[in-house]
Length: 322
Ligand SMILES: NC(=O)c1ccc[n+]([C@@H]2O[C@H](COP(=O)([O-])OP(=O)(O)OC[C@H]3O[C@@H](n4cnc5c(N)ncnc54)[C@H](OP(=O)(O)O)[C@@H]3O)[C@@H](O)[C@H]2O)c1
Image 1 (cartoon, rainbow, N blue to C red):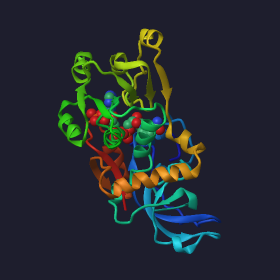
Image 2: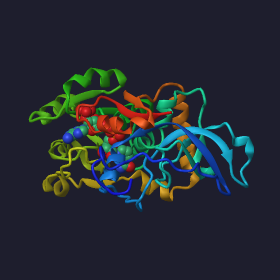
Image 3: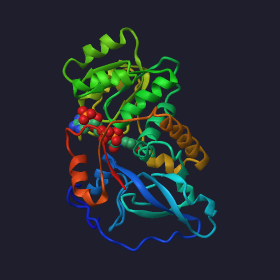
Image 4: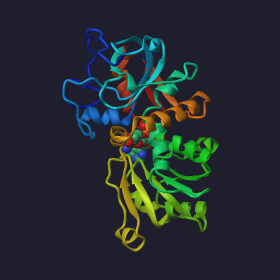
């Protein structure tokens, strides 16, 4: 990409020489790489990270190591690896040379499209559940964007950990699918969200509120947080500000936090994120971490893929697959 702009027109596909892995690097031939909302924000120049232009695009993906640079054991050639989403490499390319520590081995038998999506959203869901609040068994987690990929991973991981989830969606037709996935309650954004929350929670309250959409829906859910409870903003899909009433902040001592996975990855010890990825990769290999897939496109059809990824009524993830 030479200039920030519309996701459907700013990127271009160019031919370049195959990269050479340098010292400590491996050459990865990509097999699959998703298009995430953050990639679309980055193309617009609105993301927390603005690359120097021209820039290669794509945050995460999976591929095979096809060559190694000096000081890397050639035994690694042939490994299927997840590319850690450091934003140092663009994964929408046939081959990329990356530091060997940024190439994490995954099960070659696992579904390649699902493994390609492990780097960003499942880790985000996992960290959102683990890093902010000490949750008692059976705690209620509230979330907006319940039908997003992160939302679905939250439902799965919360269920495995013994927590319950109250999920806000904007389309009632997805409720049955989320309940089948393990959601405890699904409610639909709208004027009666308070009533729906009351019906779902009874006398109980939410211990942790995870927000992917921002907007008025946050103000509607915040009263259902426990006194002193925590709201974590990690996405802004509605394009609106996070709305919260001062009374909830002041009289009920609510805490508002932000989360950005890149900020965490930049500072977390490698052993910690490698362990988290190993745990999540094992779940993916069992088929326990799955989200709907809308389509997989070859790189040459990148414009079709980007048009599809930006559609408001898209159901599931759009990926590139080689
Ligand atoms: N902070 C971090 O480190 C981090 C990491 C990962 C993801 N994220 C963020 O998390 C969010 C979800 O990402 P994802 O990859 O899981 O998303 P996704 O699977 O691509 O799904 C997007 C979701 O956004 C919903 N949505 C779209 N437009 C909306 C609107 N105007 N109002 C309300 N909801 C709307 C969609 O609702 P429908 O289901 O009804 O179509 C869908 O559930 C994004 O904002 C992403 O940037 C943040």
